Amino acid sequence: MPSDNRNAIALLHVRDQNIALGGNGTAQQAFSALVADAGTASQSAVHQASQAGAVLEQIDNLRASTSGVSSERRDGSADEVSTSVSGITARESKPRDSMLNDLLNLRR
Figure 1 (tube, helix red, strand yellow):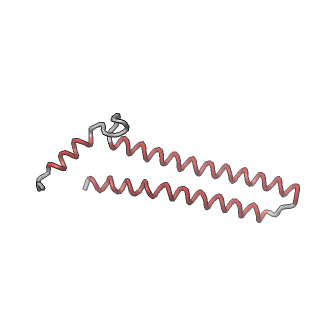
Figure 2 (cartoon, rainbow, N blue to C red):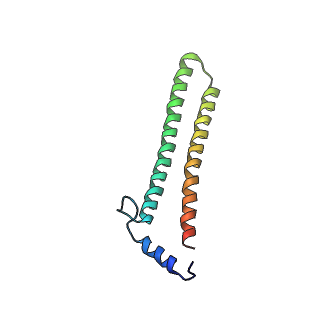
Figure 3 (tube, one colour):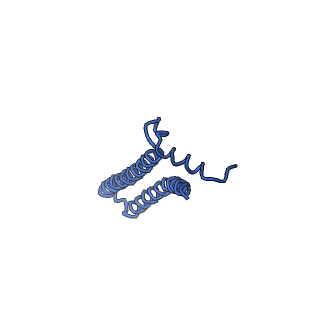
């Protein structure tokens, strides 16, 4: 195994080649697209959960106005939605953070 910098130079040449995205982009472009997609998915999940919470609150309010359901039920349901959103966001950020750390360690 050579002890010179041939491997580092070879990696530098690969950095600018279109080896990702079906041969249409660099590894950096592919990683950037991956991070953007993960951010979009996370933001979408938070937005959908927020909308679901608002709909749930409206339904509970309507039910309470017609049947006398307590607001404690509504508050418990909103907490369940909030906990679900937190779990989704945490699951998405762990793989993204791990990939970012791996890529940053390649430069060292």
